[in-house]
Length: 261
Ligand code: SIN
Image 1 (tube, helix red, strand yellow):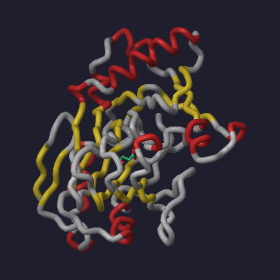
Image 2: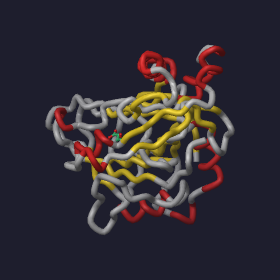
Image 3: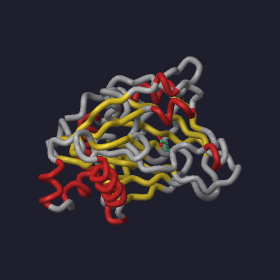
Image 4: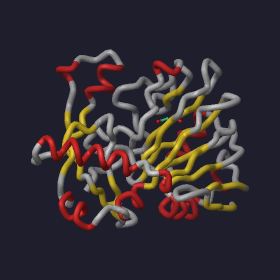
């Protein structure tokens, strides 16, 4: 297995066949994941069964709280091109942060890729945290952000009265590396708890802009057969569209997480 760093976040892994489970160097993969936060495995040929088995390296596969999974594989969501208008992932986010225990890792496997467009961008939120002024770090330490599933619920045909809210720290400490990361998702965060509304809105706007600074980003240009795994505890991602009505088909699975602290 060869590992090569690809940017401010992420590493590309070659010379490994993830469909042969006995040959998978689990320990080395776990170490690389904690070091690089995004792993790109090239040239894989993975059935839904393989994908589900591989996901166990990162934890128990989860069923998405809103979107329906594949028949026989409820943990796997098939992502297809619904057109730019209905493309819901073109915003910086960490997955499903409106849950009490959002997923640790997401695995995204590419089956069909358009000729152009459809890149996924990843932003290193350890760096985003580390670059903040000491004053802002101090002011926001122990502050909580309120995350809501309202938008996703409405999008999937649900009712506003069923929406729920959870509170997570703005600075999350990664339970395995011990490093702090900025932990905000614009589409799910309503406000900062227990501060004046103006301060909340202005601070959040500034932090959203900061969190996707060019210097923290790795842009992944997909090839069919790539498996990309990212750490939702310290990385934001953004799925660009820009491929018109061409096909883009991915299989996506997330693994169990813990309450952010
Ligand atoms: C996602 O945001 O989970 C999907 C990313 C992608 O389709 O590139």
